[in-house]
Amino acid sequence: MTTEPTPDTTTDKPTQASDAASVERNKAVSRRWIEVFNERDDAGEAGVRAQDYVAYAPASLEPNPLDSDAWTRFLGGFVEAFPDLHLTVEDAVGEGDLVAQRIRFAGTHTGEFQGLPPTNRRVEFSGLELNRFVDGRVAEHWFQMDSLTLLQQLGLVVVPGPRLLPRVLTHQLKKLRKKH
Image (cartoon, rainbow, N blue to C red; front, side, top):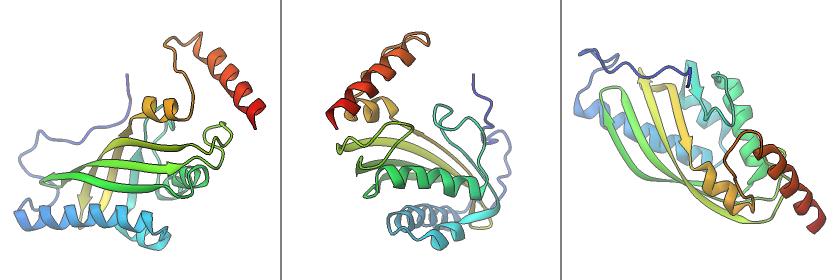
């Protein structure tokens, strides 16, 4: 069970005008946010986020909501692990103050990721994000990613079960360390 909030879709009045031009502007800002991330433009990325920005990452990666500074640190962990990480917007749809995007991630694992030493493997996986806009900036951001595909491409075998998984991961890490 997740404790992260969900966008309020029960009201007929979104927090921002829902005209087509506003939706298109929000979609353009969402795409631009991906572009400035790919350019590693921290100031440009910060400029997209609202002052009271909150992000919700997959609980397996970060169980707590992230403010703007914490989000920057969170992204830094991905960039450290995958310095050439490049995101591509595959699809985007918008309605009211919300924009959803299907994202393709591609990069090479040359730094530590979640305790996993570099494998030098190229990875490609997908993700979904939902951005809620206030006054043309992202106020809330939810995202999910295909962690199973990512872990498999890094050479990890994921076995269901909370009691067995830590032993399997420890074993895989030991194998990877012996190879390098």
